[in-house]
Image (tube, rainbow, N blue to C red):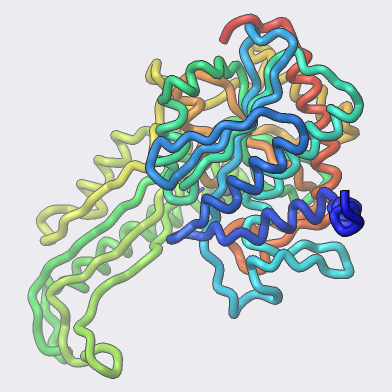
Length: 421
Ligand code: MET
Ligand SMILES: [Zn+2]
Ligand SMILES: [Zn+2]
């Protein structure tokens, strides 16, 4: 090869490959999927892995990377990550969010550094290292890179897991993204909370801004907001009293308000509008009763007598194919739990008590099939910055994660005792 390409190879490291992947503009509402899929395909091929790109929705590819095992009849292990990112507000960042600046103190700044482009590259780098140590997997290892997780996954993971292609993978156990840990213990997640979007629309009597009267649209909406705030406080109090983790209660947060009569300078100030709308992000832990929640919304939060309508958009399943809450067992009934725990120990890591994830991932679609899944992103001593400004990951944490996945991949793929799921 030419001297310049030789130099380039020497300059390429796991960190620079991570930076390259971070630079693709994968933020919604217009994520670029083509470029990162080409990049990952080339990277996987350079390691000697098999790749396949499938479009279940036009222009929304799922990239599947495979390392065949020596006993391909055994259920396989799947490592999932999503290609897309949430948007970033560049003016509020120290470094441009898609520049992947590596600072002298070792931080790599980028939207997606934690959520979840780190694991995308770590999976491949771990396999590269295992291959160079001549490790032969027993079970087949698959990596999936899916689109649209951040907007619900319906054109991504949801379609993928319900495809014949997915059935043919014969997945016995899967890992998906987790969340950073602020201390030195790795966190592992056995369930997600399920997201609901609640939209409340109020109608009411319009009138002069100076008048106080009943049944105005704003008045009606504000009453709902007050009642919802009290529910929010009751849930938060349980957390503050130390009786439950944040992820074990029902959260509800207002995410938008829409009302008022626009004027060239802002809003008309002396008119009470006849329509008002508010949007809420709700998250239900797997133990929550969805019917009770719906009754509460209908009877307490948005009673029809107050001239309001509402819409609940359930963004994903709450129960599996057997009607059970979507939770992966973290005891001896799940043999993968022991294998996973031992792999973390072998990597010199400490594991925190298994948790429910505060937010939501594509893992819920895989769990719905009855396949055990853990959420796991190896980031210790790291502030939790997903969806925040100045998202970063430290180089040493990223590199340690590769080592952790080497242990995980080798342990899981060598585990032979479970012959069916
Ligand atoms: C609304 S589906 C999940 C999207 C994103 N991962 C979240 O937790 O908000
Ligand atoms: Zn994510
Ligand atoms: Zn996210």
